[in-house]
Structures are given as C-alpha cells and as structure tokens.
Length: 257
Ligand code: ADP
Image 1 (cartoon, helix red, strand yellow):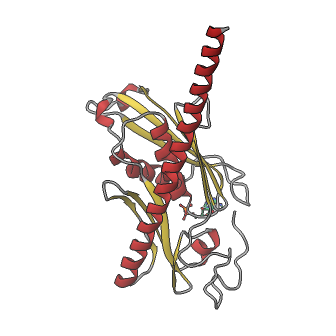
Image 2: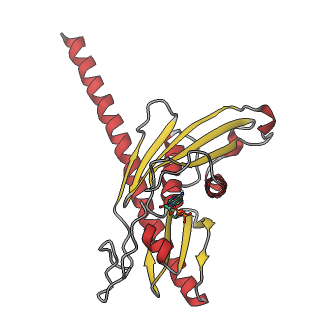
C-alpha cells in the first residue's frame, strides 16, 4: 500500500514511521496448508503485506519441450493482484513481475532435490494480495513453505528478509515508504542450516562497511523468519496429528459399542 511519505522516516528517538526500532522486523503471521486444491500452500502477512503461495507438482510437464532430462523444472509466477496497491495495477504481467518470478525461482532452486523428479514440472504461484514493500522476500518465505507443504524433498527452508539504509541509518525490513524514500535496500534469501545465501540484490548506495553491516542485519532477519517458518510448519502438523488422534478415538469408541 503506497502511503504519503511522512516528513521524517526516522525521528530523533530512532523510531521509524510505523513505530518500529531500527533493527525491528514487521509483525509476521504465517499459515501453512490453507488451500485445499493445491498440493502445497502457505499464507504470509509481513506488516501490511498479504501474500499467498501455492504449489502444484511434481507433475507431468506441458509443453513437453520444457522438460529437463535430469531434474524437475521449477516454474514460478510472481503476480500482484490489481487491488494489491492503491492505484489499480494492470493484471497483465509487468517487466518487474517477470524479473521477480525469475529471481524468486533462482532463490528456491538450490533448496529442493529437483533431481528426484526428472522430466516433471513443479509449478509455484505467488499471489500478492496486498503490497507494502519487501514482497519478494515475504513471497520467497511463503513459497519455500508451500514447497515443504507439497512434500517436495528439501535441503533446507529458504528464509528471506531485507535490510537497508533510510535517512542515513541502517534498518531492518523496509516497508513501502522506507523503500521509496530510503537510500538503499538489500533483499536477502538464506538457507540457515546450509549457511548459504540464495538471493542477494541491492538497490541504492552503501559504503563497504555499511554493506557488511546491512548484510549481517538481513542475515539476522532471515534467521528470525526461519524460526517463524518452522513454528508455522509444526503448527500445521499439530492440527493434523490432533485430528488423526480424534478419529482414532472415535473408531475405538464405535468398536466397543
Ligand atoms: P519488493 O516488493 O520486493 O520490495 P520492489 O522494490 O520492486 O519489490 O517494490 C517495492 C514496493 O513498491 C512493493 O512492495 C509495492 O508496495 C510497491 N509497488 C510495486 N509495484 C507497484 C505498482 N505497480 N503500483 C504501486 N506500488 C507498487
């Protein structure tokens, strides 16, 4: 949601325009397995961002010429709904959406064992319902969970978070006004167990020293996101386990009656 830029993005007490501290991430809410018709799905709210991710596959690939002989083809579509920003966005895929689809796919490819499923497709859809800066990171976080939810064997979850520079100060997880009015933004995707970065982009200018500080802030952000991802995955299986136990109890009751 683009908002009017406040006069100051950071006040004299180091408080940001949305009330956060410099190294504070936005509120994150994650749910796994919420779409009945997809093989895997996840929903994330990161501040005002609201994003759905859905996965189909591994499944037969069409058109056939896209088949890869040695692994599954991960195909990714990042899309912003027309109502996701204040001015209606054209539903047609923009240049930006094409680029984000590509970088998101590349950030997730190293995490999956695509070689287990040669000549198939894994189709990933990221639908931004409401945007407020940092949608590629929140999209990657949800997409990685939807791949896990689809049961695709993975080396690690991919967790993403940006950090950057606003009014000369280094900050974690920029929102839309900070992204637009700030000096630099660095989205990062990371596999914590593998200690591997799968996406690193940068917009704006930073000194060498600032670059290192922003990188370590973003890494810390990714680690926080990873904890929340794991909790969300566990929460889904807790519900499944409880439902199975309930069913078992009912079965036992019926048998004794
Ligand atoms: P990211 O969402 O990963 O930060 P960008 O830096 O390209 O990607 O975009 C920053 C923010 O700009 C988006 O999160 C969204 O809030 C806003 N934005 C992007 N595209 C549009 C658009 N077509 N109309 C209005 N706002 C947009």
